[in-house]
Structure formats: structure tokens, C-alpha cells
Image 1 (cartoon, one colour):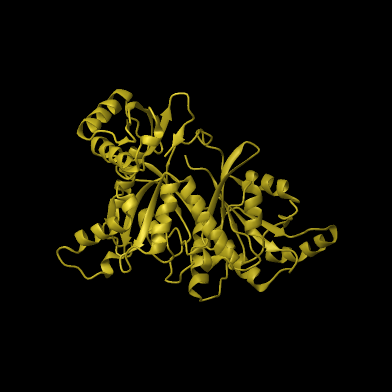
Image 2 (cartoon, helix red, strand yellow; image 1 turned 90 degrees about the vertical axis):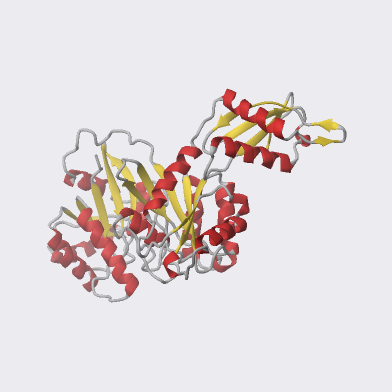
Length: 447
């Protein structure tokens, strides 16, 4: 059963994200003294007085602007309000009541949802005198808080819980593990478009303007087969030199890198019109270093002129450019038209199964014996590498321990040969493999 939803809305720069982060207990939304930093809906599960609910942070609402990005931010906030069980309308106690506040209040009255009027940035006693003008909105008694100084937050949470719908019997049941799926890549390769296609809704903002997505946006989703995913749409990762002076984008990139670290499977998106770039290779390296499953998606396939061999040739080129990740499935699709988008989650599920896969020790050693029979271990300085046996230490990713006489005798090429043999035997599609060499009476050496 889904948790109740509480939406935080208001005009730009009234402190919504600061409050959201304080209650979530960690810095999820990017906070900056710049209007428009939060653009999409950001979710966090919280608990207060034994009730669990989901808090939704939204972008600043400008009811009049026709700017493309601002209008999309308004649309995202409106979706959050429509979904919510309770709405918290935030105003800025320092600036006082504004015409923009009144515009948002007019819209909120039409929702007929339980509503809390919150006046933020009330940092000292005299500032409470500013509360009286908010009665003009006709939205009930204003609740004074200071998100930065954590004043009045308990009273606000009490009020939220009091307005929540009655708890459902299984509301507090522990959720089962969901596949953590991160959409990553350079700016403007279509990550948000693919996210919306997979969810069949306008979950995140889409624009041709690079940098539209500034945060890592999580969305829970269940497919038709009942498999649960947490789809993480991320900001585009540009070269480090290009972002070091732009703090907002820098945080977005850091969140994207963090999304790779916490995901099970990363979907690396590549622009079909440019092919694999140096930056794509670097992002692929991040995924490999993090030990995550991967699906490579070549997007904007509808914009490429094609003949009979175009897809085959480009797949070979992609795998050549990402030769250290040749185990990854490569998909060709168009998030814009929906062409082949249905293949993404199918492949993600296969990769996830391989990522979590465990092989019995007996089966591993049969494969190891066959591999050594086909190609003898190397000899260096008159000494031959001996591999006594192997076992799987862990999954996610699959990690194997090889017990050897001397780890220095394991040549890189032979290790790669063993990896290829394991992949032939066990079909580890989409997941990296990790090998650990262990000598008797010596410390482990990971490779």
C-alpha cells in the first residue's frame, strides 16, 4: 500500500528545499539562494509520531510566467498537488505576502485538498508580527517556522500527521527490495525523456536546454509483471573543467555520481548522432569502477539515416569504443517516439539477475578445469601458475576467489581469458566480474 503524500509548494526561494532536507534527515534537494534550483518533484519517506508518509519537494511555482522551464516547473508542482493527500503552502516571512503568493493561493483553493499555510524564515520573536497579513489569504491559521534554525518543525509535522488519511493495515509493512535503476549520461542525451516513457507520465521535466535536470530524481515504479523499480533520473555529467565554477550544476553532477554508487543497474545513454564520446567513456568507467550492472542505450535512433547494416555496424563501433565493457547489452531506441523503449526494462531485469547471481562451488570448478585444459596457465621464470580451486565470495557484482600458488604469476591476459570463459559458461550478461587471488599464508590481492 502506497504511503500518504504531503506536497510542499510555494513560489520560488521560500525555503521549501531547506525544510525538505531537514525533515528527510539528509541533503536530498539542492539548496541555493537562486530561484528555480529545484525543478522536478523530489521524494523522501519520513516518519513522525508512528505515521509514515512521503514528502514531495517541488520547484517554485510561478503561475503567470510563459517561460518554457518555469511553465514545466509549474506543471510538475501541479502534478504533485493533484497527487497529494495534504498540501503545505510555503511563504517567506521575511519578504511578506506577495502577489505571487496570492496567485498560488488562488490555485490551491481549487484543489479542495487539506491545506497547511506555512510561513517560513520566522527566525526571531518580532518577526511573528508579520504573520497577521497572511490571514488575508483565507487559508486558516499560519504556522510559523524557521527551516534553517529548526524552529516550529515539530508543530508543523504534528499538523501534517493530523490531516493524513487514516492509516491502512499494511502501511508500515517493510517494502521488498526494488531494482535500483539509474539513468546516466552526458547532458541532453534524453535521460528524462526515457524516464517519462518508462513511467508513462511526465515525471521529470524535458527540454532541449542542457542542464534542465539538476538533481537525481527517484521514482518507484512497478511493471506489468510485478517487478518493482526505483528509477533514478540524473543530471547530465559534463567534463569536470566545465562545471567547477557552477555550484548548482556541480551538486547535480555529484548527485549523478552518487546515483551510480547506489544503483544496481545503470543505463548509460548515448546520443546516436554523436556516437561514443570521450565523456561517455569516462562515465562508463565510473560504472565499471563502482561494480554496477549496465545496459547501454543508444538514443535518438529515429534521427539517424539507416540502411540494412547501420545497427549492426554501430553496435560493433559502440562495443569497440567501450571494449572494457563489451559484456553490456546495447539497445537502439527513441525515447521521443517510444520506439523499442519496451526493451529497456526487459534487459535491465536480465542484467540484475546476473548481477545478483550465485554459482555453486562445484560448478565453478568444473568450468575452471575446462578452461585450464583448453589453455594452460602461464609460466614465468620457470614457475607455472597453479590454480587449486575457486569459489564465489559474493554477488552484486559476482566476485570469485581463486586459490593460487603465487598471485604474481597470474598474467593479465590469462585473467581476461578466465573471465571470458566464465562468461561463456554462465552468461553473465551486463554485469562486471571481480576476481580475487588468494595465496596460502598471504594477504588477499584483489584484481
